[in-house]
Image (cartoon, rainbow, N blue to C red):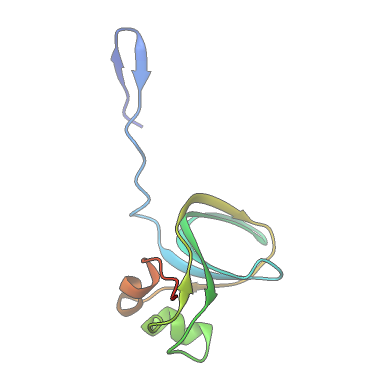
Length: 109
């Protein structure tokens, strides 16, 4: 990784997660999350820029959510920088058509 030293202090550029695939992760007991797949080790999955999907409308299955996204009235949390999910049971790549609706927070009133 590139670094730069200024006045004796070494700096590294902020790491972008845009090169990591966007995925949906269904867990055994922590619900469904969408984020950038940073690391996987067995059932442990680390997501960057992760959001929890509390509920969704406009799709019947998680496969459809990953392919087409969610409809209005869905509940998606604000992002967290990173989350470690310890009981991942399903990882689904998000298709381009679903990205926009899955990367905005929404909480209907």
